[in-house]
Image 1: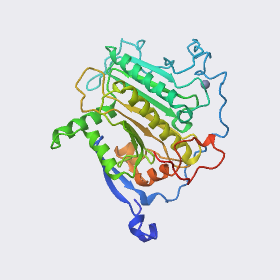
Image 2: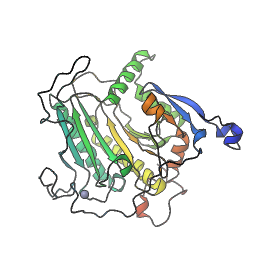
Image 3: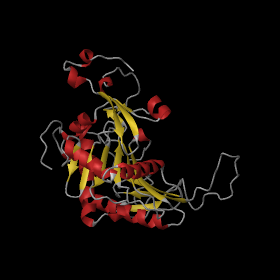
Image 4: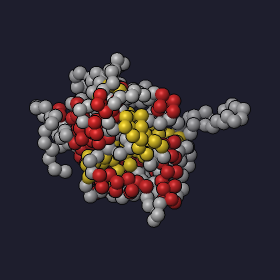
Amino acid sequence: MSNISAREAGSNPKKAVIWEERWHPLREEWVIIAAHRQTRPWIGQTVTSTLAPPPAYVSDCYLCPGNLRVSGLANPPYSGVYVSDNDHPCAGPDAPTELNTPPPPYRNRPATGRARVICYSPRHDLTMAQMSLAEISRVVEVWQAQTFDLGQLPEVNHVLCFENKGEVVGVSNPHPHGQLYATNFVFKTVEVELEAARRYRQESEPAQTLFAAIIRAEQSDGRRILYEDEYTIAFVPYFARYAYEVYVAPKRSVGHIYALTPPEVESLAKALKRVTVRFDNLWQMSFPYIMALHQAPTDGGDYRDFHFFIGFLPPLRQPNLLKYLAGPESGGGNFLSDTLPETKAAELLAVPDDEHYTRRSQPVRGEELPPG
Ligand SMILES: [Zn+2]
């Protein structure tokens, strides 16, 4: 680690040097915040945003309405949200059941479950940020129905809904879509968060829900909150591992998205829109991210400690600059962040969240924000 002094880092030593470790209570691990390193020289790969916006329909897109997929089946001429089986499933009823038994301690088993694709819109050229509130609400409702239905399957113990957005996270097709993995195991992130939530309740006096405590801590600080209404809150967490990491959560503690009421669904959709519009407006580009719904398992267990939320993990830390998972992250398992969550939240708060930049003729940076 470079040994930069306060004087070298900037004219205001107290302001310039933010160098500390922050506890990630959901993962029970330390995140190193080394914001004084951000100006270090960079000679690695950069990312350039896609130049021209895509057309509304593409004849060889396997997700556009009416088009043929690799399975040979054609998509129906759908108009709203469309869910189909993944043509390249990672888990499914066709997974081989006759497996070779490895020597201990190795183990294996069939990859049962389901994998589906969820198209948010028939329009090839939209992103969530450009969809209407009603359209995003419909996506949330389909997440609800899919989680509930897939969770009922006896071989399914967990439903992971997620979206990979942008070429830098490996998605070359811009058609707005996400995926549903219904698996016979519980994804590790949720397993870790569940254990942390249980421990927190046991060890807190009086017993408290971990995520409720996180929401209160964010509210008491206030600087990292991007959106809040009666039902939903969105914020850059104090312990963010990625520069523009954002959590969107219902204020009421529910384990699964299907437990949300219609007003909570609408509120969640509004928060999702506001956050994704801010992302896109930040650098006036379609902002890449990995988005995942953190939901409790669906195996019938007691998960009252688990608080459903949606996490955005954007891979960019500066325009055209990727966060690499290197030695500390991939090798050591803890994150090193070169950015300060308060600074990144301030950047997102400094751009409008009520109108997407593609609908404006003037640059959006640095303008005043409307209330709410
Ligand atoms: Zn398409």
